[in-house]
Length: 315
Image (tube, rainbow, N blue to C red; front, side, top):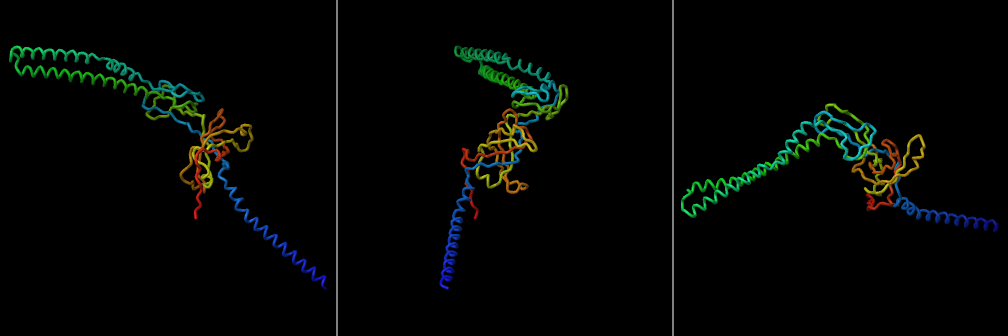
């Protein structure tokens, strides 16, 4: 009987000790959980954004600034053009003729030189008559002296008028030059012609489309990022992009392209829930990144030069 009692007591003590060990282990685990959560919220980690779409940044449709007839449209679709190159122009024969006339006027200073000679003569005549009156009083009447004085002052004004007209002729020449420039369509950047809407000899109105020009040197990589992740980066944060073409696996998808965040939207997109639209500008080496491709973008928050905003807990 005593032996049975001892076994029972021993068993009870072991059970109590086991229960204490389990409770102690649970408390230890509970104390460690906050530290584990904090490591997940580490702002130094990068953000991977899937389902990004590649779009063009430099894409313009060039049109005519004035009505007229196209004298030439140089490039065809697929041809490269340089920044500043005249790629199309309207006929400008009438303007060229007007320019030749204006140029003659703008370089003709005969009226100025004549006015200067007339002024010199008027002042000489005035001085001579004043000198006569000094020698013989009242030989020249006061009315004649006033008339000669007025002629001398008038000659000064005629010089100013001639100089003004000379400057106006120069401005008219500049105006015609500006009108001739409006007949030209100039490439605003290096690029490739993707569409040709008009050909040589066609009549165009003001604003009519002539060519579409695209540059592929840089592209936009656009997607949506969770609101909580937008606190981890700012405009200027570097990114790395890889193509992710659905349904195939190509060697080009192994290449990495670098860029930086350019735009973070100021409002939440309702159709995307708690997401904000962002896009990065990425250098398009070898023109690999084509508009419409899908890609994965990694936002390198740990390499950002800018100060990252701190997330505030709302109570």
